Amino acid sequence: MAKRQPVSATTIAAVAAEFAGHPLEAERAAAYAAAYEPILRAFEQLRRLPLKNVEPACVFTPGEARRD
Image (tube, rainbow, N blue to C red; front, top):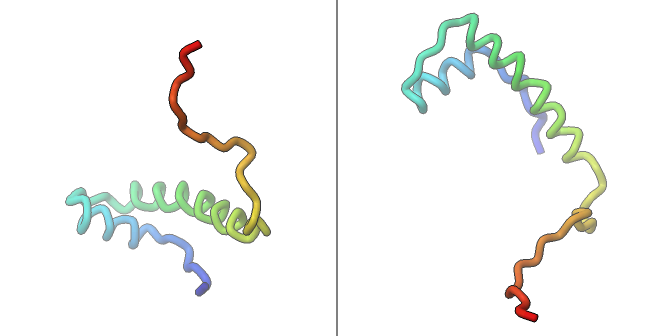
C-alpha cells in the first residue's frame, strides 16, 4: 500500500466544493484538515495491528426469537 499523504486544507476545500457543492473558506478548511488528520493516523495504526485471523470480542449472530 502506498504511503498516504497528509490531508490538506486545499483537498478538504476542493472535495467540499466539488462533491458536496459547499465551498469552504480557507480557515474552516484548515480546521477540518487539522481535525481529520489525527483520525486518519489512528486508522493507519489500527491497520498495522496483526489482526488477520482474530474475531471481534463481540459477535452478533441474528436468530429467531425463542417462544418458551
